Image 1 (cartoon, rainbow, N blue to C red):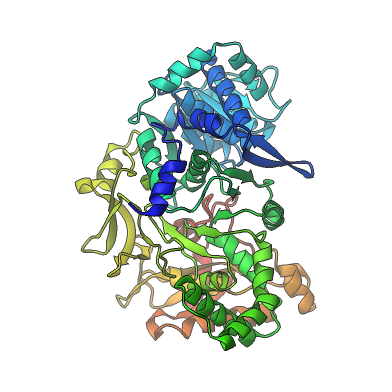
Image 2 (spheres, helix red, strand yellow):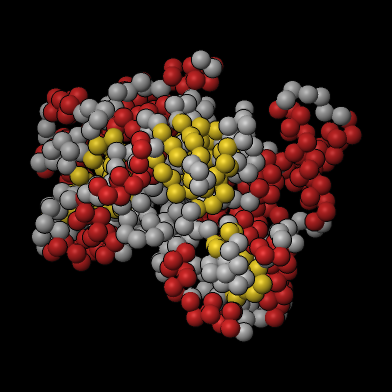
Length: 601
């Protein structure tokens, strides 16, 4: 057994289920900080003992409401400490926690609440409660809405009774602790822990059934990588409704580390990083792309920047292998350290040991840039159906462009058509009330991921595309659009790029501009921000980005025409999932007219 695995096993609570994890962590770590969040201008810490007591009160409150083992209770809120309280409270009471994205519409909330047959739902505030009120007449199983923000619970309402989180906790304090202990002890590894509804780039979401064993196993598998240790701080802005963030929460608590929550404002992510100074930062490509733009936009000389990256890669590679760094190379490294590297690390707070990116592809050049600067951003791979993760790169073994090696206990094979198949103790139990989809996903005992990939001789997995995203041109050429799109998004001004060309004679691209960068471009070119999208100056800039991407591929794979759309893609307008993945079917349908014009001109 490797040293990292031994250390992880020793640090873990060794809990049998996710229901008894928190009590064991609270007993072990006591006054050590478990959570950190900002109240006004101050970062406030919550100890493990305080967290354990709060969760116990919530679990007992739910029991007092009549929640039984196996009942579903939903959470509709931003990532915040109360999300964690609710999540552990639900599963400690023997219930199954059901995640709903805070950005979901009332109709989308109705789908999850109705399909999961949730008996109660935690809602963040009056805005989220209003979504429930709008659909409560068609939710026969829903009895309670527990409102997190003080004062947001209505005194009177409709079919669903609204009570405050404080009132729920008060109800819990009226019960005997033995009720809590008995309920926690009754939970088995085979019981359902969470329902996570896939955000779905196509079709309605499916409810993935994940057991306590699934999450206990995947937590142990992830902990064996040594990414987080007791005393570390993980900064979390990702939605806890998503499997990625949920695993970070479980692992952090299991190991006695600290979880710091964002201020629920995308503009505050970088300031938060600088204040919190985390050691671990899990994120999605879009955030790293934005930080990359921030770090490189003021570079006076592109050649010098590229040279600094190459020097950083060489020196850090030598250091990782324990080899001596030549004096001349060290001198170049020291110069770049002062001019670039330390400034980039400062954006992340200066203490980051490792960042992890997942959920979508990221350009290799961006990963190399951050590694050269001393901020390792390593790709992992998984899906809700794998209880978050299946493969990871780690500091001891990584390859840029790959999504890493299989976690301990995870099996991978590549099907004849190139699809990635997975097997292991972290694989989900099926989709709730959807036997046909479950059989398709778990055909032959292997999870059929829908992703295309390859394994190298050392076991590193490379994802080459989605089976459904492959573009087959009119000439029969199979093309993966993600590589072209990633290349375009490296441009400072481009936010999103969607390449189209299925059954068409050539490829075209729909481009959106980064709204945060538009004022700077407008100022540089004497334009108003609203004039930028239609300006000749931006057309030239975008064409230059297209030309740069085209230079790296053959003629058949090149983008022949592009169109700048007037507005960015967003979750609110339906083109992005909550983890910022593009819903291609929505984009293709919504902008079909623009695409037709590109082919007709």
